[in-house]
Length: 85
Image (cartoon, helix red, strand yellow):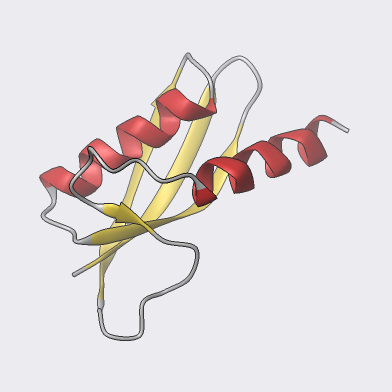
């Protein structure tokens, strides 16, 4: 049951728009952009903290967009995102 709740929460965050951040989070691979690698992050906080850390890593890598491809954990969150340029 926790896995389902975490998946729903991750999908909700994946569709949220944070206009103040430079890299744009997308739901699927953009057709006009190329994969530029994968980043990972971890957080002792919640899913939004993890999403912010993945966004910061995408910005630092110069990505124009990123897609969260995995998020898991209970008290300690882990996540990965694919970067696009």
